[in-house]
Length: 107
Image (tube, rainbow, N blue to C red; front, side, top):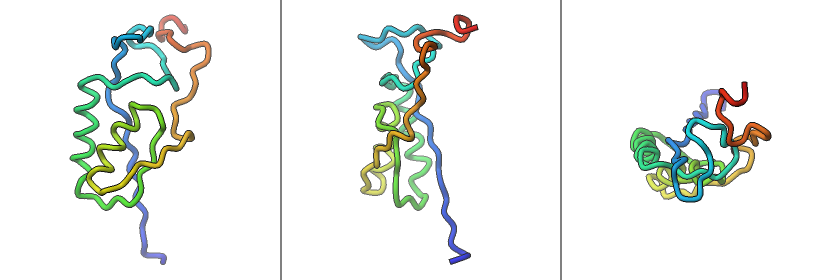
């Protein structure tokens, strides 16, 4: 058992789209645990991560239930016939009073 290794790959979600219909957040704001969608670029980034990892041995995939994270996890999982396990412990933190504010506004 001592010679067995576990490798963990941490993959962040791609770029988000704060300009989607219904979004009320300014550019470069704190959106935390809100379900903000990926942009077109973010979807390309998610697929690039899946392509990058396709030759790795992956047995399990965990993801935040937020759509931006789950999208990437599903792209990676598709390479292995897996289904991502959604776990709230991977959810981004709630930014509280900072939600929707830029760094300048928080200062």
